[in-house]
Length: 367
Ligand code: MUC
Ligand code: MG
Image (tube, rainbow, N blue to C red; front, side):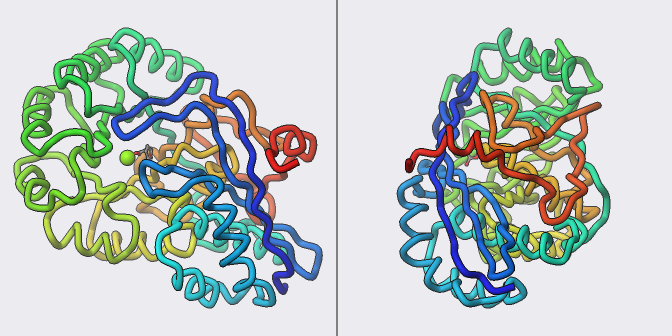
């Protein structure tokens, strides 16, 4: 079970329609496929989605840090030495999605070596999750039409609405149109990606007070600690920390400081090992948790659902597991299927997925 090589392969798959939100937009899934090879011939996989506007990582930077810094530190370790891996990766600051992909590819390789699903190794609570779909910026009619299409095609009834940075009246009109168009039976929450000031956020939340929001997520800049505390104190729905609470230490600071009351856990940035730490902390603190999406492809989504389904806390709420629906294609031999509003965990060893060699050859950017 010794690690012999760590590969970082750039690939790019276009989106059918771009996703736009307050801190950026995504037109192409220009991600990095990470492959961990062992001396038994096992190969574990995971993907890193660069999000320069959130973490400062780029595709070239992820490839460089894995190739130049992480790979030499990991070759020779066994798949069971995951805490040694975590400690070595932690010597380098930042680079969350690069570290997460390395960690998850090691878990995948471990599961394949033991012939056990990763979800069972993590916690084995359930085999599926309800799915929440993210609606990017558009006008109200287009966002309602998109939500109806997603509900009718996949049975999804939970929607996260992107807000912030554009006129508040437009965001409020979108949420109102969704509630009126899709009815009381759907769950709605908003994500501002740091796009409002605390006063703007308070105003917007007042205007949406009758719309039955489930949560509000990262409405204003994380650095505005006092403003966020002021905002959170006046809200009557949980306030989710996303970009502002990536590590367990961030979680402690945000929650105990009163500037958030719930958490987004994204395996794309904390892997399985770090996400376990955040999960256990959230459980101890009694927080609501949502499995978030770093605008992942199907491989990243397979990781999210494997982790989310592993625990009662993370599988309780609908997880954000559907961004891949906006991509033109993907890398897996068997595409993930959302049916009846749910995504099942793949049953096979490791993550239970295989990379399609022809698709990888077509989309990889290094050959
Ligand atoms: C989200 O929940 O914010 C958009 C930016 C990012 O970092 O993640 C996505 C989704
Ligand atoms: Mg968010």
